[in-house]
Length: 103
Image 1 (tube, rainbow, N blue to C red):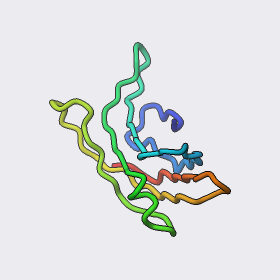
Image 2: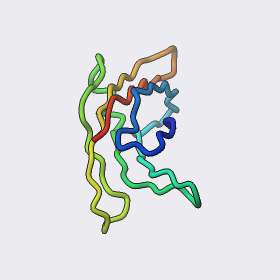
Image 3: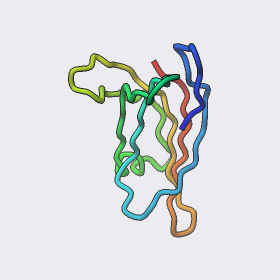
Image 4: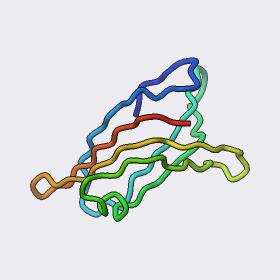
């Protein structure tokens, strides 16, 4: 989970994550939330990248990825700019994800 940026239309600050992928890993899900001060946060959009797509490029992937609405009747659009690398560390696989920007 990224840090919360209050009262900002540009909340991404180049955060980086390292994830240990479990055996049978199928894909990476990305959710964008609207932080609420009262009640639960609202999931406003999502994205998904398959393991095959992530592992296809040994030097990693960098680009803009489309976000889709969570609710079919919502008019949500946007993209997230990511750098992604999958590497082996012994018998395990590691995913490194750098969140660059969103729009």
